[in-house]
Structure formats: C-alpha cells, structure tokens
Length: 125
Image (cartoon, rainbow, N blue to C red; front, side, top):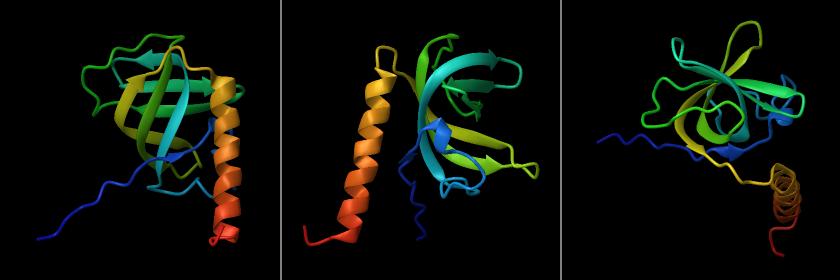
C-alpha cells in the first residue's frame, strides 16, 4: 500500500520568497503568516502582504474560513511557480491569527534560523 506523506510547511517570511531563495521551488511546502490585503470570492485568490512583499494564495480547497481584509492569516500549502516566476501558494490549511505580533514573529523566525544553522553545523552540541 502506497502512502502519501504530507510535508509540514517550512516557516518562511514573505520577504524570503524570491526567485533566488532556496524556498522558491516548485512544490515546496511552506507556512506563511501575513496580513490579508484583498480577497476575490470568484477566483478564491487572496493576496497577503508583509512589509513590501506580497504573495497570492489559492484558497479554493479551504472551507469554513472567513476572509477579512486587514486581518492576519497563516497558510500552509505548496508553492506553485508559474513560467513568469509568479509564485502562488496552493493552500491546504488556513487560519486567522489576529493578535499575533508580526515583529516578534519575525524575530523568532530569525532566532529559529540561527539555531538551525548552528545545530546543522555542530550536531553534537
């Protein structure tokens, strides 16, 4: 019996999603947290923003999630790269995370990256 493993979403900030980033690969499983800038019910496309970076989120598979412009959301899904290097996250999970301090979130993400780099370079410590 074949089993399909669902990968956990790698924590990334929107600023890290650019063509030269190691996260910018077709099918990469990602977790992003950002503010909802706009949402189209017809296309099920949400556009989230964090600082000056934006990302389109395909929400067609999400149920029971209301969208409010200005609220903060977290999405987990797979990255789809179009031929023009446009990235769209095909969301499989979404939740509203209003109340999160995005500055502290980014600081903790930087500390996590530092810890992972140190741990990978010195696995015995």
